Structures are given as structure tokens and as C-alpha cells.
Image 1: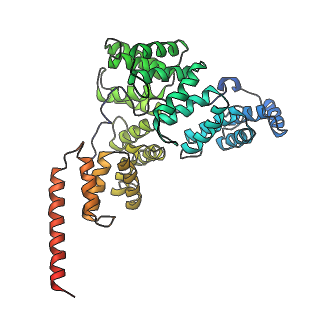
Image 2: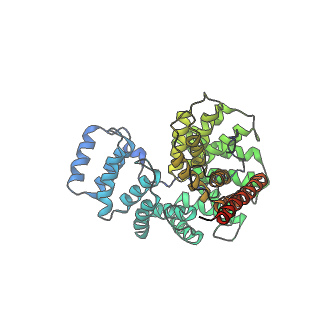
Image 3: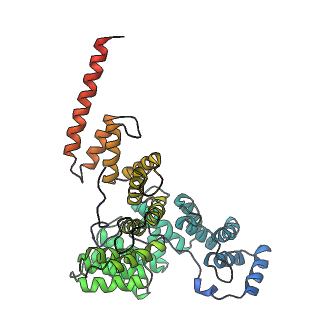
Length: 401
């Protein structure tokens, strides 16, 4: 079992998810402070079959404006309108599945609804669907499909899509790398006050992608994006404050930014927040809080959150021990290439702890982990154990029945 280390991960100015969770349609501010009489009128229209009223009522419940927030009720009204072909309702329903309104996310269900709205030509749905293809969440990963849908939304003037397309040109994912085109698109989205594009402009300065490296300007844009609510910028600032790279180390600020991003459902930030609670970095050690945030990240398919939660469950570290669940989480993380999970699973297969002993599986997992970790000692131990097992088997065969 590898020892848990302080620190989240090396700060590379690029987070695991290039874009935030896809957005829904509608203007949240337009339903703020609504009187109860308005909600009652809206509900009467919705019950009469008015799809526009059904969408508005769903938004009211989703945001808790004039009523207690109830995302299940929001999903009910979105689904009624979505089943009748309303593209805004389809997009909003997809968003709630994407964001995990009922706990665990369901990206496949989100993709289904996004596609229906995207085929109708709704730019927000086109962008949302493109981001799923880019990450492979709920659909087969395809840079070609991602670019197709994101470009359609960008051509329709969607600011998030314009900035995202610029990011793809900066990284060369799905399109030829073109820093000039990247900067043009990202600055166009910045003029539309898009927080994700503000973060992306910071990335251009941080990496020197078509611009001189200027960490001062990069941090300025990260802060601007974070203040506007961009979770990717919040996460990166959290890592910068934790590591002390390009700014004084400040764990209180690191936790602050992790919390902001985690509260928005950003899985990498949730895993980072879990780790600071487990290790007591800038906060009081709280294993219950750590497990909660790891679980939220793992439920979204985050490999790091799954690996860390698996370790807590395996050790029974101030939570009930659950070796079977630990193995499930480590397997999920290992399948995504997490080297620590591959290492821990390999040790379990080598020793037969919690799983049937399987030297071949252990060898495969140690080999995968060796791309990042030093496993020479473990491979030597595995070879020794395999030899002892084969020798014992040979002796039994010679002894006969």
C-alpha cells in the first residue's frame, strides 16, 4: 500500500477537464425574487400543457426562486416539456443529468437529451454535446464529433463554444494547432465576458501559446475567471496557492478556491478538497468530510477521487472498512490509468488479499504502474512468489494423490 503524500498534483496550468460542466439554457437572473403568485400562475399554465411555462417552472424549482429548491421537481417539469420536443427543456434536463442533480451523474442520459436539442439547432445543446464527445463522458470519445458540435455552436455565436474552439486550436485537439486562431477566438469570447475564455487566455500566457510567457498576466486572468465563477480557474488557483508556485503559499486561500470549484461539482476540486481534509492541510483533519468529497468526485468518474476513497475504505480510516468497495473503486481508477490504483491492486492480486491470488494480473498491473512509479522491488517480490508457488505445485504433483 502506497503512503498518502501531501500535495494535490503538479501544477501544469491545465486541469483534467478543459471546460466546466455544461450549462443549461435560460437566464437564471430572470426568475430571481419571483413572488408566490407568479409561481402559482406559472404552475397553472404548466398544468394546462404550456411547454414554455413548464420550462420556466423547471428553472424556478432548479434555482429555488420563489419556492424551495427542488431539483427533482425541476427534472419532472423539464421532462414533461422535453418529451413534447422543447429543445430548451431537453438541454436543461440533460444538464441536470450532467451535473448530478440526483446524486451520481448520468452522462449517457445527458448526452441523449443534448443530442435531441442539438439536432433542433439549439447552440447551447450543441456546445454541451461537444464537450461530452471531447471527454468521452456518456459517449464514445471523439475529437472529430466534439469539434463538429462545438464549431456549430460557435458559428451561432455561443460564447462558451467560441472560447472552447479557441482552446482546441491552442492544444491541437481535433484541429491543426494554430495559436493565432486560438488567440483570436479566445479574445472574441473574452469580449463576450465568458469566464471560461478568461481562464483560457490565462493559459495562453502561462504556457506561452502564441504569446510571450507572462505569469503576471496569466494569474490576473485566472483570478478574473475565478471571480466570475469559473471552476477550472478556481481549481488552478487552489493548486497554485497550495504549491506556492508563482505566488506565496497560502493553504487558507487554496482551500477557499477548492471549495468554490467543488461546490460547483468540479470533480478534480472535490478530490483535492477531500485530500486537504484527510491530511489536515489548512483545515482541521476531518475524515468524514474527506470521504464525502472523495465520493462526490468518484461518483462523477474521477479516478483520483476513486483511488483516494478506495484507500480510506481499505484501511478503515475513521470510516467503516469495506475492502470490496475499495477494490471496485481501485479497479475503476486503474482502468483510467491511475498508477497508484494500479499499484495497490497489483499488490492485492500478488498477495491474494481481498481477491483471488493472480500473479498474471499482478504482473500486468505492476507493469502499467511502472510507467510512472518505481516497482522494481515489487516485480522482484512477485517473481519470487511465483517461483515459490510453481515449486510447491510441482512438489504436490510429484507426491501424487
